[in-house]
Image 1 (cartoon, rainbow, N blue to C red):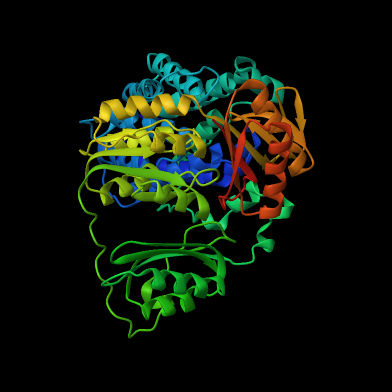
Image 2: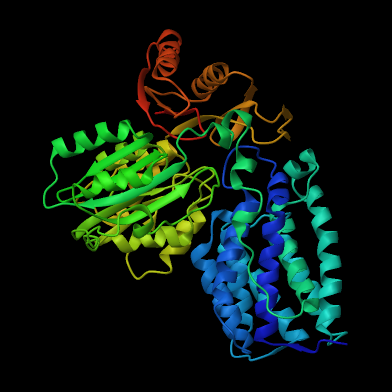
Length: 555
């Protein structure tokens, strides 16, 4: 039987089943990524974005198709993660615009909504590339527009549109050199087609549908971590964060708390202000840690995440402490300032450094942990300032940060920092008393003078720029481009240092060593710099960052 119109009930089902289909296949989408570093991969980011959309849709029970599309748009805008997630959210946004004012939609109206989605997504990207999710989305929409002249059956329209989209997806291999070299199709395009395929299949599903629990599928960690970093090797399983509210914070309180936490776990961050202490620790006994903190003051903003399952478990206060625990005080609002900084960072040392440099809110994230637009928006809502500057410190977070600026009426400026060193240079170059415009120019100029090297590991076998890469190899990068592939971390680090000096002049090399590197090893790298580049000063800092053995900055 032909499907002449679809309503809100049908679209609701389509969004939920589409999200489930992508969630089931996100690991395959990740495997198509040609850049094999531990970053926020396409499949994971797109899946989390689509799930955020479907969760909003799942709350509604209405025949109005625009209400459903609008809910999906709102959910995805806030839940968008990574560049692929932001682009996907713009596809949903344009799709909703195309259905505005409609209770049901015909084949022609659905096709037009697809086209509005593609056009909106293209506008959101400063320099759109063909051979990506954008190409697949636009080709699918344009084919549906043409088909709508020949048929009013939505089932026929979608079936033929999907066939055409797969033909275009196969052609992406020839559109981008990196795809051709790796002999894979575009990951974002394939992810989009999983959503559309699931949506199309929903027409045959009877009764109520539910969004799958993402934790039931293969964990994110399996896709990101080589054997040496398997979840079985995680010593302290629970990432525990909270605030302690006090009448007055003293240095002695902070030091005593740090000493106690060092007996309970690792990755410890204790940052105090006048009457509040922020605590972060990895431990196997989060309840015990919280009980100790309660002896100091009331707690709020508690979050406990089981890192072995790699999904967020928000454990309530009653589950982790006694029933007689005092009622937590509301979070203290921040004092209004002229200028405020929000920084994305991972690693206790790096986070502490940004705090010392004047950062007001640190969003934990970066490689493999791309915060969502809503995460960034929540940080923006925590601060009160005339001007708020956001430092993403990762190329895959910039779009999500920029999307957050349109969801607030505050003066928010995203400085397009693509690495931790660029973020440091930006905040150091800030001049109090200067206008926001002048400081934006200063910071943008400063980050252009920073040269960054990073040492990490390959999360999958790949071919990149004629380099054969095996799963678990050590990778050395200059400005996010893989330049060195070795088996040993020290070898890769020294080679990247050589490349940094080959291509640039610099007086200071900053060496941030990660959680899997000893201070002794880092000092050996500094000694290499002093021996081979005596005119350059080296500075060694314990960044504590995960996944990246070293982050290097030459200025």
